[in-house]
Image 1 (cartoon, rainbow, N blue to C red):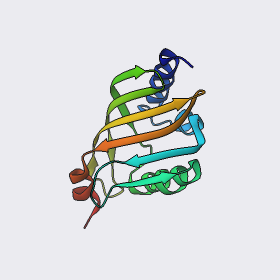
Image 2: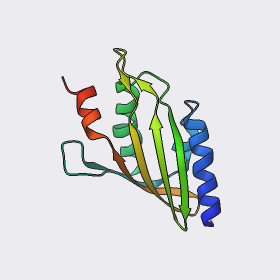
Image 3: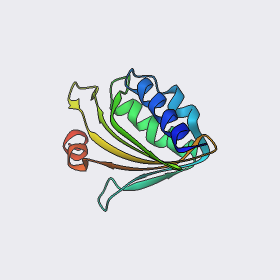
Image 4: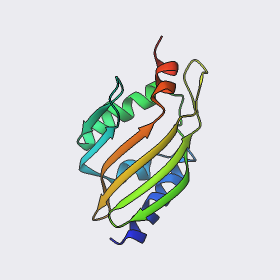
Length: 132
């Protein structure tokens, strides 16, 4: 796929995520998908394989936040197999605490599938929201 095709796919995914529909996002993931929370703190980790991403990462999102999970793209930049998405969430915890993190996802796509995401986020907000 071209850089324009990759960018269009991510635009489509984020248009749906903004509405709380994660199906196009999950369907776009390759089986060997790898998602890394960047950094060098307690939240930094890698989810290897689509099953880990769906079960471990996305499963935690679905229990830690009130459904539906929403995130809106503010900027999408495509360059070859890479698409960078700057986004902001619009979510709350089950206890009603706001969780509107800001993200930068560096996405690697090949053959129309998401192969990797390197995610940069406000980890201090994660700590304040989810640690007692």
